[in-house]
Structures are given as C-alpha cells and as structure tokens.
Length: 409
Image 1 (cartoon, rainbow, N blue to C red):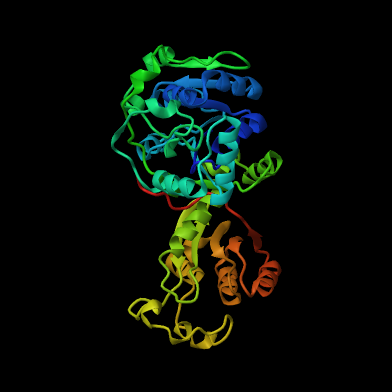
Image 2: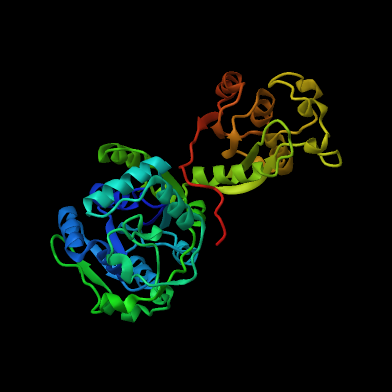
C-alpha cells in the first residue's frame, strides 16, 4: 500500500505520516527537494534531531517517478509520503492499484494556533490571525506561477505562506520528469535512526529563483479517497481517529465482491428519476452481473422528476399513498430485466436500500437466495420476516469509507 497525504497548512499531515509509520510500520518517502527546502527553513540540525526522535526508516528520491518505481517493486510493503503536491503527481500515482490518497483537514483557528506554536518553537515572529488567513487562502486557492527568490527566508519575520505547513509546497522543474528504473539506485537514499539525511551537494543559493507550479491544495483535497478531520490537541486522540480509518484494510484498494457489487448498486441509483428516494440494485449469480435496476416511472411514461408520478411529487410521507405511486422499484426493474430463467438458484441481489415488502415478495417468488443491502428502510422488520420464512438470507454490508466518484485531473 502506498498512501499519499495532502491537506492545507498546519493541518497535521506530517504528524499523520509519522503515526502511520509508528502504528503500521509504513516507510516514509520524501522528495529530496522537499527535504532541502525544509532544511533551508528550519535548519539541518533541527531536521536531524526530529528524524532521530522519530526513529523510523525513510527513503529519499529525486522524482515522483523514481519513488513510484521503488514502491512498485515492493508493493506488498507499506509506504507513505506528504510530497504529493500536484494534480499531475497524483495522476501518475493513481494509475497503480496500490495507491490511496488521504486528505487531512483542520479548522482554521486550530491551524492558526499550531502556526503560532511552531513559530515560537523556532524563534520566529508569528503571523497575526489576519496575515495567517490571507496567506492560507492564497496558498489554498491560488496556483502561483511567478518566480520568487527565497534568499530572504533567513529573515525571522519572513514566512512565506507556502511554508506555513513546515514543508514548502513547491516543486522544481525536475520534480515530475521521466526517470528510468535503472537509474533509481543512484537517486535513492535510505536512512534510519540517527543517521544523517542525504542532501544534494548544492548550495541553497542555487535554488533561487525557483518556480512555483504546484496545484492549489483545494484541488488535491477534492481528489482524496479518504479524509480525516484533525481538530485534536493531542496525539493520542489523532491516533484513535487514524485507527478508525482502518486504512490498511485491503478493501480500500481492491473492493471485496460485496463492496464491488454494492458500488455498482450505488452507481445504478444515480440513474433514478424518482423524486422520493434514489435506489439502485444489482442482480448477481456466481459473481456475474445478470441485471441492474433503478427506481422510476415505467418506460413511455413521463419521468417522476418531470411530474410523471403525482404521489412522489406531492411529498407524500413514506409508506403512504403507495396505491397511487407509478414508480417501479429498482428491484422490480432488475427482476423483470433478468427474467425467472436467468435468475435461477444461488443468485444474490445487492441493493443500496433494504427492499420494501412488495419487492421482498417478488424476490422470493423468482428464487433469489440472498439479499444484501446497505441502508435501512421503513419496512425492514416486515421484509426480514418474509425472507426468514422463505429461507432467503438477508444481511447488511457497509462499504469502506472510500469515495465512489474520483475527480478527474
């Protein structure tokens, strides 16, 4: 598994990375350019001290591609990085089946207090709240493209907005360039314990000027697969929240059959035109999809969301006026599409909502053996009794907290 972490300044991305290394033995991966910039800000000795305290193994690379090549060759191990700062970089990593993007978010005032504490700890002048808000908004929503000399960083009062997180969110032109696997050995350094991080033989002045071309963090946040709210004031609470993510669950990377078919049911529900509820289902036999269905008015009738069903468009309470409803249920549509002959024995129906009593009777009649649902409905007890008497297995399945829709780069 390879976890990339993104988030706004002072949200606690690096603390989450260190906790993953401590709790689940993730290896921390860095781009050398990011480490060098961090050393320019806080001093090499401070970074070495921090690394000695953490004590976890880390690896350094020149490019995202070199980092990805190493993970690909060792994909059964766990890796984590905070150096994924562009849509292009995420697009490169997301092509692999072992990559997961985690966003770390935190309230504005919490992040401001962390910024003040960080500056005080480094002997720097802290930003005012107004300055912090302005610079955070600029770094969160704007994509700087102009050149900026960083020589003035030596001034204690100068803290670029892009530096608020402790690791500057900028990349050099070489950060996303092609690199052959054969050259990765020369571009990678491993260090653990108190060993000194490898820093390129280059004077800091050689980095000036550099060009900012990273994507605004808000775009990266929208691309995340999982998210965590870090509003905690102590590490133990954050650790508990990370445990709740169950981030090492393989279902997050490659869905189980139950999750896979439930995702398809949720996708089918997007086609629903019923004004009351979006419902979708998938009829499966021997792990093969036989038919799908979603709720809405029958063909050749006006869609429910266009006024085709008066009962649904009049906001009638759940369970009332069903004799006036013209909408076909998702389960009904799937069963009609498949036909009794294709359903056969040992078939399973996945539905994002527990079937109603009427659909339960039809499911029993066509010979479905198992019903798997995600969300409850108002008739669950009656439906469960029908299935129990008919010998149909009914169970609930909760898919992992991964997002169904992925934002396009």
